[in-house]
Image (cartoon, rainbow, N blue to C red; front, side):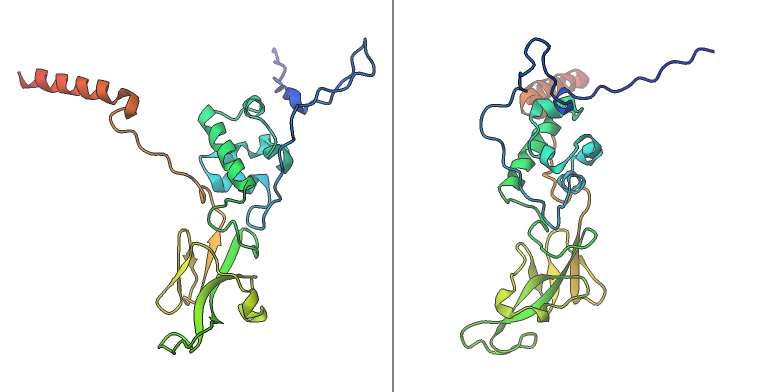
Amino acid sequence: MIVKAPQLRSIPSFLLPCTQSRITPQARCLQTRGKAPRIPRPTPFVPDTQTFLTVIGRNLSQHASKIPSWKALFSLTSAQLKELGIEPPRSRRYLLRWREKFRNGQYGVGGYLKYVENGEALLRVVEVPVSGNIPATATLSPGTRKIVVNVAAGGSALETPAEQLEPVKGLHIKGAQTIVGPHVQPLKGGKAAKVVVKEGLWEDRRGHKIDGGERRQAEVRAKRRGEERRAAR
């Protein structure tokens, strides 16, 4: 019985330690010219590489094990990502685009939230004082307005001074206390809601090609008209 030796996957060259030349023992490793890219800090909602690739979608989370660290995620070039096996090219372009957005503080739903536990961020509606003579209503106390805030699990917004409460971006209140917004999941009782890390939470959806897309649209439609004329004879 012949046993074949297992095929080992080669280690990408940029992950290998630098070696010295036999001729020049003092030779140093080549370094990329130019300023090194800035590595943004993880956020409470996106604390690691796995979560980042999960929320941006396009099935990129399957490549999480190929990227060794958070620093590598934000410093690898397109060529290096290709060497790691991240294909097709449009997936690399999409990853690089979202990487720059995150680096510049442009997050999707939940990206700005501070209190996150096990991938879930709790939201509540609170009343905060406002200047001016605001009359009371059936759902609002006098001199106040309602905002949506992020609170720690098991905590209360009442523990934080009103002037320090920050409304959550992109969400609004419907009726007395219903929190409405993209990917918001209401909790039982209707007094709170949550945003949960999930696959494709921040994904930019691709458009659907019509008649082969812009490049092939005229050709596809011409063939269709020809087939319709032949069928009508």
